[in-house]
Image 1 (tube, helix red, strand yellow):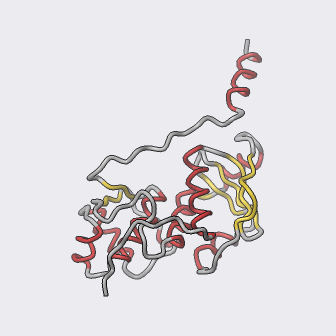
Image 2 (image 1 turned 180 degrees about the horizontal axis):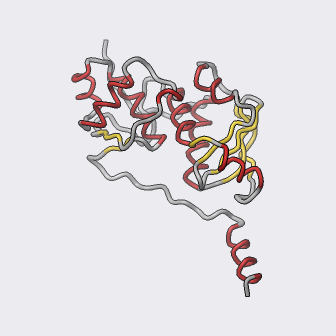
Image 3 (image 1 turned 90 degrees about the vertical axis):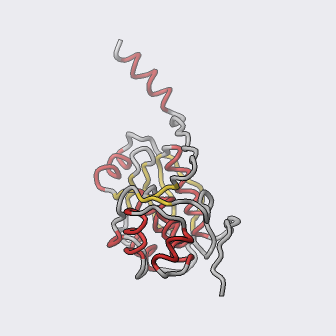
Length: 208
């Protein structure tokens, strides 16, 4: 049976929506919260931190294979609000949540930004004790850290299906742990918070 991969057409499912929403929040440096499965998830995109107020949502996301419910739009908060400062002090790295959602989003096809012929290199080791993974994940990360390889070559070297390599790559690429080294990837343009210019003008006036 062939395990050839294609680039995924974005499916309208909860994992895809959540994963793409988190990417936008991180890339734009936004601050606020999402409602996931009826729980509020605080996110400081600029500091790349998130806080699960209930303490149970992330564990649920890591273990469940069910469709998740992302309710409503991203609700903005000021970066210096108490909730955002609390998120920075007591939250977890946003990359952990990015990995978890991209891992669940993967359905045998490569996510946007990933290609089958990419030579993949890990720039840091993910904390797999807190992340969804499978039995071969440690070996895949070790190989791609020590010897950057394509999905095809890594599959042959480790004797694991291409889909296993691809899932690790997609999650790692979305989380920022890995990137292709055989092509240039366009960096996301971080936009200033819509209230930032007003705040800056007010602070400058008060300091005169």
